[in-house]
Image (cartoon, rainbow over all chains, first blue to last red; front, side, top):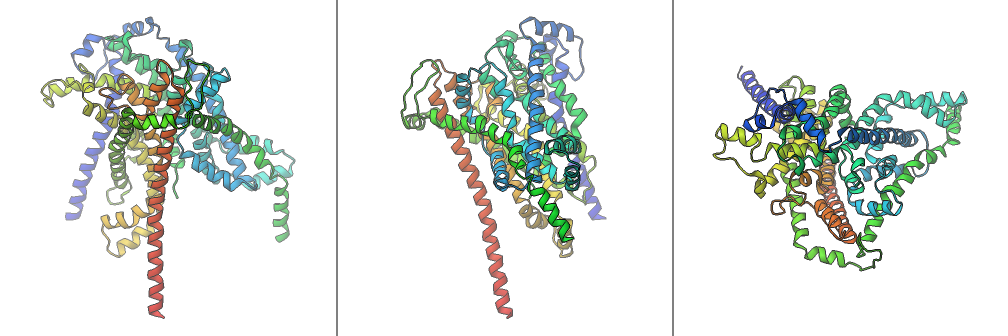
Length: 279
Length: 323
């Protein structure tokens, strides 16, 4: 009796904490979305959890001052989609090779990938910048897209995922039927590994979509700005007191990601666990 | 049967050179876009190159000598560690607590999937958006002051971004807010992969839940904890987006949130564009991160092997006594 009462009190306390943490995660975003529909005087008067009717005015104010949100959207989408395709394809290919073929440097490559997951990469940005300027690739998207060929954390995920997915008998059978190795990878492996590819793709997409530092260093032309770079300009003097418009700009930048999250949250949450070291 | 196995092995051997072909794109990409820029950054850190002048010369370790005499660098080093520790310790603690609650068979917490999904949400949002959002939430006329004053939490509105203490706290809070969900999910994955039979036999032996946590969960979770610690450290040492965009991009107020990465960017984007000096900061971040990560891995591994040796010794002794 005493034991169950204790458990019940404990449980109530835990749910209380869980709700507080939930509010901490959700309320800032809710305020953001609501304030996007309110006028500046309304926002200055106080906090409200209900939307108002100022959305259109805010939108006009936002887009009137050189904040070309559609351009930013298009630029970010273009880069992120290409990064996603390249990352998923080449990471799967690498992981496939590790699992299917016996070759001399296999063990070395595998440990090397684990090492690379733990190495800081942003610190090489100065060398990367100078190198790209020599190649005349500043203000180009190539340096933002092509390096996705070598994405250690995606490869690590792919290796973990394929470990339980590859059916060696199927590969053998396809070989007997005369399929080339690349055909086997395309026609048998990729379709089987689709759920893993989706998870990897989401992470690659979100990572690229949210990336601020690399494009910020490499790109200086306004019309080439990615979405995070545009969002950053919302902190500047142009919108000093247009709070409603600032919130609207922020809301527009996160709504696509929120939609992706609502649709794919199960893939994402399970994917994090798979992409980490367990043993 | 043996013949079949042999045949199988044979048919695979002649395809094994595809291992090199399929891993070649990564290797080439890695050499061109990761390794070369890193080596080049090391090289640049030994020169006095600027963006403005065409010529430059090799100056040895002069950039590093200057860095160690530069109080801004020392400050940025301390700031980076401070912000990382203030966010990481509660992050690990809360994630661990939540993971224990969620996996407890006694408590039977409901909707675990739902809670985890909500707690992970802040992590996928754009850091740029989060920084500008929190700048507005904590601004002088912003919602935090509005609510705080109304419910009597503070007497007057606080100018958060003029106080170093508050600003450091806010940055650490944002980092915590963005990452505790991820840490929770990884720890839970580690906990659920521990075999329940350990707990069952401990329960038979009359262990309480604290003993089970310290004697079974923590030791078996060690690889997961090392992973979390190292990846968080690598991210934390390179912290840039949030502190850069939260205030003026120079770590104001009083340089309290100027991280090493911000200092690197400041040197790079200064009027003269000190490429060499900026590269030397990058090299220092690289070295600090790698050395700290190695120390963490070594410390946590050594403990393990020592304990193993002890238990082996004990086993040997017991055997000798017995014999």
